[in-house]
Length: 243
Image 1: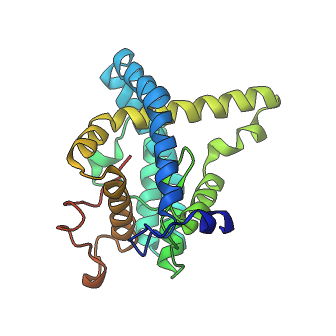
Image 2: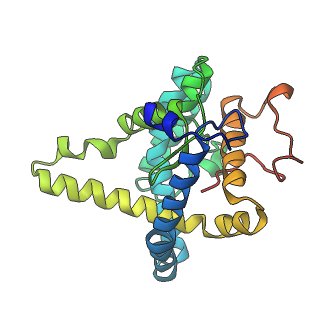
């Protein structure tokens, strides 16, 4: 945090973004990694992967994410939703062939989006300033803690407990992580292109989209009027994932 304060510049104009100088340079770094690594990998993945396989992979990782969702539901006191999401995970993990088929959505068990950052926000923990992380992208000090909590709720993080060989466990967890990253990036190729073409200032657009999305999710869509972004000033942002 001291390093980031030292990187802050008088040119920062958004009170939610006092570390704009650091954040802009880090986004430029991330964009470079994306242009030379992630985007070509995602385009190759999209080219070689049949649509039904791509959808199955997305469903598989979404199903694993429902473990995190179910736990965070309960941590926020949403016990009925937690029960529904737990049922969703059980149904897709069994009849849905380990989650490759999303049967739950067809029986009125829709996908929810809850994470540990939202849980902290639900209990009144302030997000802190906007922060762009290396490789991970838009976040905040609270978001960093949220990521750590979500990793702890992800069973892929514990593959070493079930595998006797550390090399094998590292290869399995690393391979699954790489596949998930490629799948997510492939799913967002069109969204990222449209956002980049529409934004006059790409950095400000993604910052506004991230802050809008987190505020929207923490309030379950019921954003207080005082917290609603001025859409004219923020280039028509909607509460969507910018990356």
